[in-house]
Every structure is written in C-alpha cells, then in structure tokens.
Length: 393
Image 1 (spheres, rainbow, N blue to C red):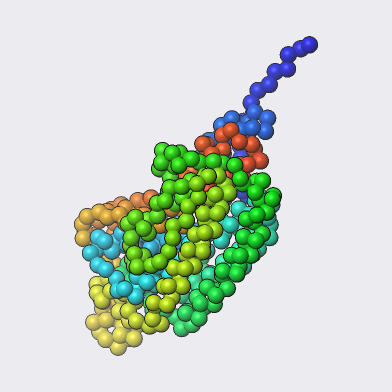
Image 2: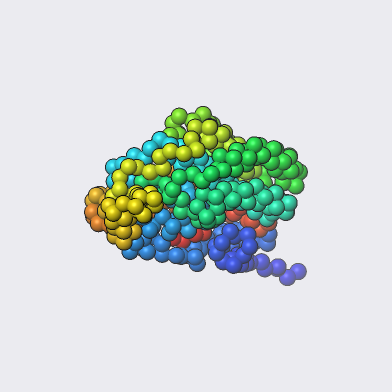
C-alpha cells in the first residue's frame, strides 16, 4: 500500500477580515484543523499620529490621540492631558477631576459594550450586537450633548474641560445608569450559562498567570488570568483613591474568563459612575484659573480687550510647556494606557510616544492560538479586544 504523505498548509487570515477587528493579518500554519503556528502582521493601519503630533501645538494633539483608539478616545485624551499637565505642574479643580472620572468610566462601559456585542456576534450570538449597541447609542448621545461630537468629542483639554457641563447632563447620565443594571442582567442571561457560548469559550485560548507576567500583559487579559493589577489602584490618579469599587479577576485565563472579567468590570464602572455623578455639581469650575492655558469665557472675549488678546494668543500660538519629560499611566478599557511626552520649552512637543495596550496584547496571539483549532481563532481574537489603530499609531 502506498504511503500517504501529509504536509502543513499556510493560510492568510486578514488583513481584510470582518473578525480581525481592523486590518490585522494572521499567517496561520495548519495541520488539518489544528493550528501549528500563527504570526500576526501589523502596520496596515499605520497613521503616523505620534510623528504628526510633533508638528502640532500641545492642545491640537488631543483630537489626534483620540483617533488612535476609536473605541476609547476619551481614555486616550485623558492619558495625554494628564502627562502634559504633569509637565506644566498644574492640578485641575476637584470638580474637573470628578467629571473626568465619570467620563473615563462611561468610556470604559462604551468600549466594553462594543467588545461584548462584536465578540458575541462573531461566535454566533448575533442578538448581542444589537442589544449592546442599543445601550452604547445612549452613551454616544451623552458625548454629543457634551461636545457636539459622538465618537471623538475632544471634550477633555489640557487644564480642564472644553466648557462647563451642558444643561440636562445629570438627567441623561442618571437615566442611563438607572437603565444599565437591568440590561447587564439581560446580557448575562443570554450568554453566561448558554451551552453554546460555554462550548466556544471555556478551555479555549488559555493564558496562565506566568504567561501574563512573561509577556508583560495588563488590563482585562491579565486580570482574567489572576493578575490583580489595575492602575486605578496601583497608581491612583484623579480622585480614584476616594471611590469604592472592586478589581474583578478570574483564575482560568481562557476566553470565558476574559468574558467574565470584562462583564464584571462594567458593573464596577457603573458603581463608580453612580458615586461620581452624585459628587458633581451641575455648574462650577471647569478648568484651572490660568489664562495662559485655558481660554477666557466667551462673554469676556466679547467685552474685555485683555480677554480678547489672550483668546487670540492661545488659539494662534498655543501655550508653552516647561522643558522636561513626563509619563502618566491610566487604566484604559484595554489596560494600561499612557503617553510619554517630551518638551524643550516650546509650544509644541519634541516627542509624543504612546503606550498602547493593543500593541502589547498582540504579541500574545501566537501563544494563544497555537495548538488550538481553526474554529477557535475568532473567539480568541475577540477575547483579546484588539483595536488596530491603537497598535498602528
């Protein structure tokens, strides 16, 4: 009988593939249905934002960094403005810090909703996408109320906020917060004990605690493997140290554990939002009292010569930042997010370097995928929650 010769097959998944969450290319070596190896190839979405930032004034960079992570734009903006404010040596009023906490947590919920909806849809739970986008739409409405823009509000500014909270903001936020716990029960009722969901996620794409430490992974991926690290607790910023919330963790480290971790994080973010909205007064300070950094109120621009001059100077020349370097990390939806900024004392930076969680998470994909089945690749990529703009910046 003639010998049957077999050999592995190499296939490309992406870069244009609906389940790679952007233009991610995976070169996969297959032995039948089993994956021998997988190599991610990045760079298809490279925007050059970090280099572009060197040509912009400090304030003009906020809309740029928001576009790196199009699911967590305000988290990016927060990390950037905190780094610049550290160089400036300023601390914004407590009310502004509370508003920033609220916005950051609403942003985390919004990002996790997109993750849950798309992750569920890719595994076959198509209804999840419609349900999650339904609640996310309410959060985009709040963005629009704040700044007139839905995806990239650019509401956070160096030195404070773009302007004070609009009328009706508290009612809109409270309406969402009152509604959300019931919807979370709805999501979990559909998935957490669903036999198909369990079959597609339990025991799939396992990362041990040691794997997480070896690869330097952070955020929900690390917490899903038992590493209880959260920047909000380890290096508190804004007023997070005064909030009552837990850092959810799981021990197994598979796709299902990462699902449980993010779902629990949404509930904790909801707790923080409830506390924050109760602390925030409808009106009050929305920036530092420094006309060199924060533009004067519009009514003064129209009536006072000095305010008019200051307004002109800020918008035409920007403001200068003392020479030095700074890095302030925050806990973004995908893990530790920060910006390393360098100034030579001018009105634009020498260097703006992002620490993007997606870029680091992608390096674990070969480990996660190898040895599994081709049918598990989509579930694993979804559990990592990649945003390619966050990597290719």
